[in-house]
Length: 473
Ligand SMILES: C[S@@+](CC[C@H](N)C(=O)[O-])C[C@H]1O[C@@H](n2cnc3c(N)ncnc32)[C@H](O)[C@@H]1O
Image 1 (cartoon, rainbow, N blue to C red):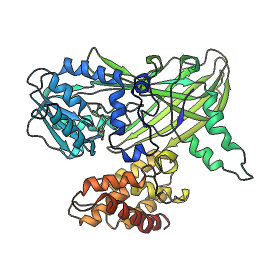
Image 2 (tube, helix red, strand yellow):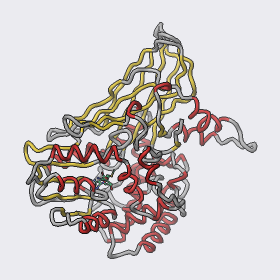
Image 3 (cartoon, protein in one colour):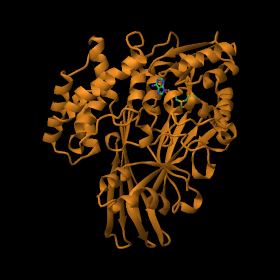
Image 4 (cartoon, rainbow, N blue to C red):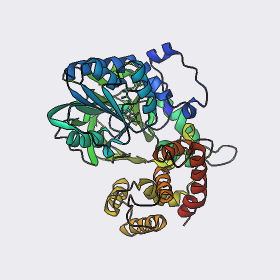
């Protein structure tokens, strides 16, 4: 079992096509080489060929196409190859500059208009016949495909237009994997060097792990958790809360469960990271429970998973309850994965954001969610969704402190550049991004105002002076 303790980012483990590519893996490649993750995406031939075949099927000669999150430009290029008259290729990251260069080099640039920005803010001058994109996370939904596609379907697509992918399902199966627990979780139960580090135990239990789970480790048939049809009627609900029941038909050990997606690109072409699909670039996502449990035949396991999906984040809570054959509950476990407490080492850059006192993490959490449009009511709902046991008073007080710190009740686009930048920094201070990565975002937003190193310096100052003091209120 090759599971990594990590957030639900994908492409962390290599499939066969990657091994063939033989990249030089410099330790700092992730931070320094902006095209690195896209090179990895391009190296996944199953992914790329599936999209190519699907785009050939979905895009008709003369079509107008929108590519959501074009990255290296791959899907836009496929659309031109399929005969598209015009492709609007939208991308929020600096990779789009390389995509433009690649388009020119391949003489595909006359048909593609690259647009730098977040899709929600972009307008295009005509409606599209087809919206395409690859925004599938290992869990299917954690790259925010649902809000992004909903917005695109409403604003970019002709009536009766097509979307690719057009369906996205998430399935769950129970798992027995003692390796993850013995390697990543159990070591934190005992003292080390005479010190009790069980804080890390809690962090690990709030971590979603990525790995490939072969059939031997899967102890129940998978069940469908959710299915979304990605078309013009797509309406996603911010909160998905569903409980699945599994019956145990033989004695076994339970360690957690996995989730994976199954996406229809067209009616005949699918892409999935189901364990049976082999080891590709998406692994399955593993949700641990607190300890390994011996199950008897006749036990009933209920798995409740709650996703809170916004335009910028997905928060996941899970609860596993075990009942004996006579209905008596013998185990009840719950956990939530949210960024401030789980800070994977590989995402912490050279300058570490300040450590957050767990007592104040809620304030930091609220600060990190300010995106210029979120309302107090939405924040309240969000906090309540994450932990229904938080008292109303506590939530109000947390919001008061966060709003006081930001110094406003709403954020207006007319703010001074420096205020907007401070705001942007706070909104990305989620304990996940390292300063280099935040600096890149800031620089992307204000390219004329700041050099990358200036942006980094400002972030350092901002984090040290402002955020640290705010969360220490
Ligand atoms: C998984 S990559 C796929 C890139 C390319 N389409 C491919 O298939 O190789 C997803 C890309 O979408 C971009 N992205 C995500 N959300 C976006 C949004 N709301 N607006 C614009 N770009 C977005 C990311 O920056 C990333 O480059």
